[in-house]
Image (cartoon, rainbow, N blue to C red; front, side):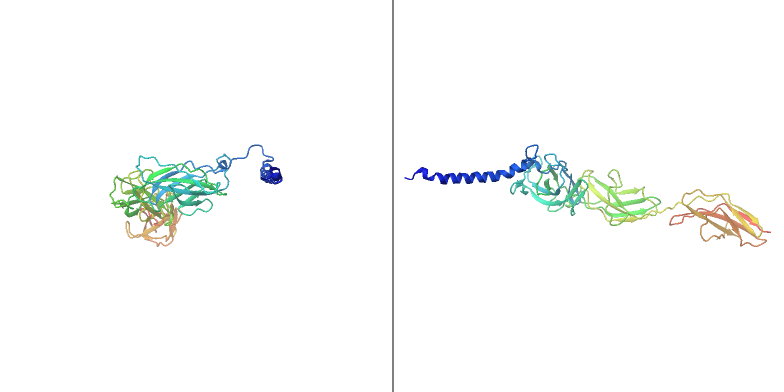
Length: 382
C-alpha cells in the first residue's frame, strides 16, 4: 500500500494549476467590469426588438407583407445596425378555425443566428441597405410581396425576424394568416376617348377568376392613370371602387397625354387583378373663345381703320381679320396669324369700293379653336 503523504506534492501542484487557470479566466471579466455602474446586460436583452405591426394583404402578384422596421433593442437601447429582415412562411393544413401554431426560433450556437424556425420556411432575406424586388424599403417602412410557390385556396402564415449587424435575431414578429383567394382575370378591351378636359373610359368585365372559376361576387374596379407608359401608377383615380365598367376622368388637363389601366376585384374586399392593357388619350380644348363684339370700320384717307372690344378669355391667342366685297360671304383672311391688338388698318383698299369686315378670336390650344365671326362692319371709300 502506498503512503498517502507521498502523493501530497502532486495533488498540491494540480490544485495550484487549477487555481491559476481560474484566476486567468476571471481576470478579463474583472477588468471588463471596471468603470461600469450596473450589472452586465444579459445577451438576450441586446437582441433587436421584434416587429410589432406585420400585415398581409392579397395583391395580383401574391401576398403583400408590410411592417415598420424596429428602431430599438429588447433592452430599449437604440438599434443602429439593423442589417436585414428574414421572412418566414408556413402552409397551414388545419381547419380555418384552428389558431396558427406558435413561431419559435432555434439557434446555432449562443446567439449565432437562427438556423431554423420549426414548421416555417425562410422564403426571403431582405437587405436593408440594398433591397431587391419584390422587397421595398422606404424610410422606416418595409414591404415584401410573396408570389412564388403559392396555391389558390390554401392558407398561409407569415412571420418576420429582424437581424442586426452581428447576426443577432429579434424575437419573431406577430403572425399573420391569409387565405390565397384567386383574383379576377384582367379587364379587356379598355378604350380611352379624349374630350375637352376629360377622358371617357370603357372596358369589358372579366368573365372568370385566375383559377378559371366564375366570380363569386359582383366585380368592382379601380382606374389608374400615369403620364408615361412605363410609370408605375399610384393610388386609383376613383375614391371608391366602381361597380360599372366605365369611368369619366374629369381631372384630366388638356394637351397632356395620359396612360390608363384598370384592375378588377371580386367584391370590394377581394384581391385585385393584374392591370389591363394600357390605353392612351390626350384631351384637347374644343370650346372656342367668344366672338368679338363692337366692330366698327371707318375710312381714314386711303385706308380703312377697324376697332373692336377685347375678348376676355384667359387662353386667348389673338384675333383674325377678314374682308369681303359682298355682305355675308366671300370673306378672305387679311391677317395670316392671330394679332393681339384690337385695332387694324386695311391699306389694300381702292377708291369707290365698299368693303365688309368681320373679326374672330383664336385661343392658344393645339387645335387653335376659332370663335364665330363678329357682326359685320362696312366702309365705302370715296
